[in-house]
Image (cartoon, rainbow, N blue to C red; front, side, top):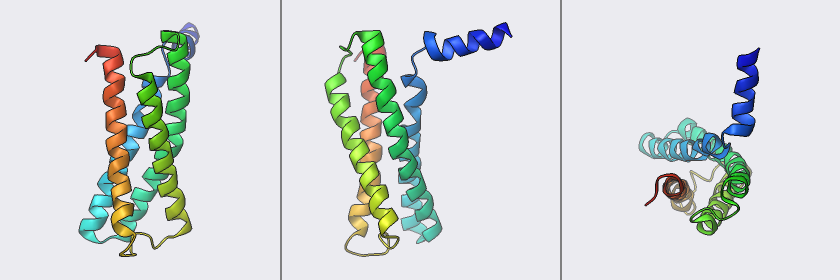
Length: 146
């Protein structure tokens, strides 16, 4: 029983939550970009659906990462973590882009098949992954320096 009490305390009090949560939007945007690339290559609707599922989950996980990041910034850095303002701006942009991509795709299941929207739709996946990667780098700068 003591082990479980220590584990719960470590997860909820001792260790910051943000580093545990932040890997989800990075991985999900990366998986989404990978699946949309495969969908382009194989011309597969099923792979495009996998990309869509990943980008939708990325938008939700971005909210969780943002919330825990703000909480950790306040509790661990007194609100003055390095690059905090740029990270907030980029995370907001990531949330808007992933949410808009998921919502537009949910409303129009033929978005991937429409020649006029396809390039923008595919680009949104890669820009989302790029934003998540930059945010991950900036998070590493907070922990390890530049």
